[in-house]
Amino acid sequence: MSNDEKRPSWVPEGGAEGFACRVMDGVAAGHDGISAYKSAGKSRKASKYSRPKLTPKQLAEGVLNSDRGLLGRAITLAESNLPTHVDQAQEVLKTLLPHTGKSMRIGITGVPGVGKSTFIESLGYYLLNNGYKVAVLAVDPSSSKSGGSILGDKTRMERIGRDERCFIRPSPSSGTLGGVARKTRETMLICEAAGFDVILIETVGVGQSETTVRSMVDFFLLLMLAGAGDELQGIKKGIMELADALVINKADGDNELPAKMARNEYERAMHYLQPSTEGWVSHAFTCSAAKDKGIEDIWKVILKFKEVTTESGVFANHRRQQNINWVHDMVDEHLRNLFTRHPEIVKALPEIEKRVADEELPAVSAVQKLIEIFEQ
Ligand code: GDP
Image (spheres, rainbow, N blue to C red):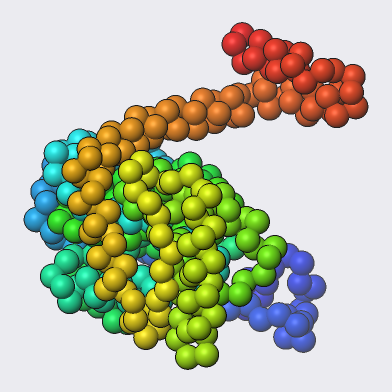
């Protein structure tokens, strides 16, 4: 083929040499990552490296045998939104359910920078050294917006990250808080079936996520700092009522004394709060996650909590109630999705909202109208 034959129509005749564009020979296939199969119109054969398809039963067996690879795959399946995956994941979960429930589920919250990951690493390290298998999960509904997740950099947890008996899974990165929570809860069950004794679930201390995590754990721990501003304290009261223990972190160096004073203050303040768990009085403690100080004492508090609440029946009741609430939450979420995605609602909503905002239509009438549209 001569150069002139390769000339695109927009290049003036005879202008190819001096024109600011060079026409190069193309390649038949295998170019720029486009496979030869694709360009030749053939479907691509499964490469010898692609993973074999596993049935839900095989996946569940792998999880029960503590196979880390299959554990990861089962979790990925549970995190998927594809309808076929959701069905398969439910199959896996059904098989695993009789093997779940044996771990201690612990939620950890606190504002960014309080030391959650350092604390989890320190507690995780202590637990691994004491023969426990530890899974670390996260609920971070903000991660889909910020593009990162709170556990996104947790693979840096060098002391525990490479230990075979430790499993770290960052927050599922898409969807609503309800969606993220569903995935984390299922991940927690899968990890339990794989034999992890302690599940640590981290969440950021802002917004609704701590209430969500509280609803899926046995013990909820709030990390705080000494001398945090008054503006923060207001937010904390509600969260403090969710906590089974309040821990002032960074009690080291010059900060040790202020941390102890803060502990005493919080201890007094907690007298006036509703207990988070029936029959359990929440207390305040200090620790230094960075220096591994006070961690063992906190673990002892958690064990005591388990003992006291198991004896009183609160532990088991709490879990039963959590399962029931979980169903209701998912029904709420599902109905809300059906409603907000309903094409007629999508069409009618902006106008109805405008009329309510302009005080032309009372809110109750607006709701009646929307429900009518939905039910048609
Ligand atoms: P997170 O955002 O709550 O997960 O907080 P990080 O665990 O990332 O910790 C935030 C910063 O506080 C890091 O620079 C840590 O090294 C530091 N830090 C965490 N725990 C302690 C502690 O017990 N003492 C001191 N002095 N620093 C700490």
